[in-house]
Amino acid sequence: MAIHSSSVAIAEEGLPLEREIYAYESRQAELERDQCGKFVLFHKDDLVGLFEDFTSAVNHAIKLYGRGPYLIRKIGAPTILDPTTSIHISAAR
Image (cartoon, rainbow, N blue to C red):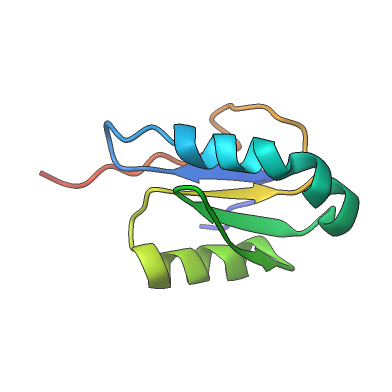
């Protein structure tokens, strides 16, 4: 299945991405000025990396953090959250 997304938030159930969203928003102006169109990966308060495409960002995130939580966002994309732009993964119990 191909995923086409401007923004994706991946988190285990019960772990909101407030820290990652806050970290992105606190650097949003700088990122939009200098890196618009790239994909950014945040984990907790840290900007982990910048990527040319979504797939590269996801592969790096999974390699480092497994199922999350982490935030991948296309810099400069509108800030919206709907089922077509987010993925929620919860651990199987």
